[in-house]
Length: 405
Ligand code: ADP
Ligand code: MG
View 1 (cartoon, rainbow, N blue to C red):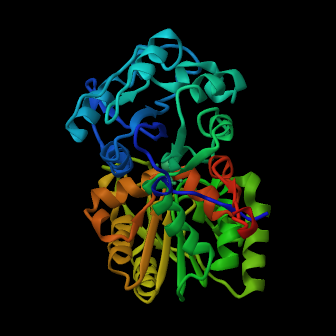
View 2: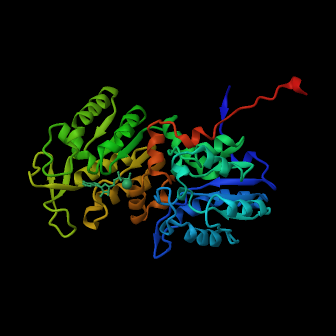
């Protein structure tokens, strides 16, 4: 039978207890929310439920308290910020399960909202415990998942819980993520250029493998480029290389060549002798790489080459910075790629925590088509892996038969 993913808009929410799983795993500074982007991203879904007179129960994880109560990982600062953003009171119980929250949920009236305390304070969350999922299930009539950033986790509030609720579906943020990332796998406009960077080949090789089935070109930068270059026999000095991944990298390059995918590796580099923002930085090419040189950014020739390819792309996917962008002198390559992506003529999708940070620092965040809120989840989606959180939301499509009437 055909399966479908229902939307929050498919349900009559009035008077219903609606559990919304969100990703409020935000950075804190001095006990308050330092960046509320993730909270803001879930507001349309929460407001939709409240405007339709639902009784809203919000659940989220926060940090890694490892199944124990730890005030450091309390969602209290998030509850305050949420109340400001919603411009209404947010009820905040001391725990996510037990008599306290159960009573508050029972007494909840239409248009009221509860934010449960950190779900990961309970060991049952990460172990996907059925008993824990049942306690949460007892709270609600409808389950909505808007936590794309947690969709790759097989945890109770993402997997066990929705499977217990017949009326389940996706929130607006989840839908937006699936739509934008889904287009990269199904019929992207061509040319489709993927840019892969960041620290490790090992975490991105799955994405590389999948991208070569879909993209016309893959531009490689960041530390992972040096494992690929070394695999090709290029001298990479003292740059960060994963020696255990050389064979995998070599195989991936051969496969891409077989498929006719244009894989570009950097041809010049910004190098230093010590990784320090004050260090003297010079430019070298693949044939002049000194034995003691550490690559910290892609060089100007590579930047120009990548910019040209990006400027002609109708679809761009970018994950992973081109260099150690946290140090300003080595952020140039990443910033120029951000500029090119922001000005590319077609659809541009960016994923990855550090890539988004780089995009934000360079001021180009508003100019991309879609900035994915899920780092790990967006990579797994691109790899074509099944995400437990999405799988658990799927329901069988009920075909109404005429003779029933
Ligand atoms: P994202 O979070 O966007 O997926 P990653 O976490 O994979 O990106 O990689 C980001 C990290 O890679 C940054 O901390 C950056 O400093 C590091 N990095 C990029 N280029 C290099 C390099 N040449 N040498 C060492 N580290 C690098
Ligand atoms: Mg990262």
